[in-house]
Length: 114
Image (cartoon, rainbow, N blue to C red; front, side, top):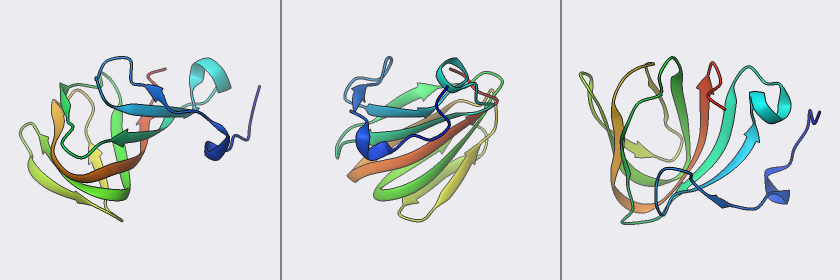
C-alpha cells in the first residue's frame, strides 16, 4: 500500500462522469486504504461540472488556481478563485460553471467515495 504519492508523477485521466474534466486520484480507500478520497481536478476555461451530489460525503475544495462559480443548492452561489476553500455539505446538489480561467482544485471527499 502506498502512503506517499507525488502528483507530479501521475497522469491526468478523464473524470468518469464529467466530460472534459480531468483528475488525478491522490488517495482513495480502494487504492490506499484512506478514510478520504483526495483528487486533483482540472476544469478547462469554458468547461463545467454539472449538477451532482456526493451521497454521504462532504466535498471540500481548495482552489489552487483559476476562476469560476459554484452553485450549492439551498446555500447560494460562490466565486471560486485562487486560495479559496469551500465545503459542500453531504447530500447537497452543486455544480461548477462560468469557468473564466482554467480551474485547478485540490478536492477531498470525506468519508471516501472511492
